[in-house]
Image (tube, rainbow, N blue to C red; front, side, top):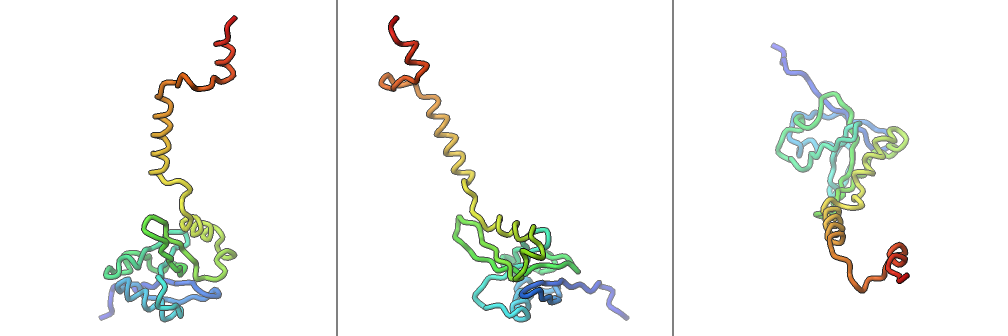
Length: 157
């Protein structure tokens, strides 16, 4: 009797427009190790996959869960390297597909945007808004120099 479960695979693009096929019906750790071997990646880098829409799969953060829960069968993914920048900094994502900027420029832009720290965090904006509100509620100082409109109205006639 033939097995009735659908055979699934994913396509991973890497290097100089190379492709490899992998079976995601294993733990994410096992899948990433097979990808590391097949794609000739160093042991000391963190690998992950990103779909063509720019969604990073975060496989390395869930090493004991099934990879098939994170990826879609018969889809194409780009192999990326994850550089951890620090606790409060965003990860930096580097495509391991050499010509991604030519093949899919929109995806390259998305990866670059995810890798950039935000110019101002939400916490910084809240602090700035609170400071502005405090400054606006303070009474005017008697020693403060008047602005041009105030100067005319306070001069004796």
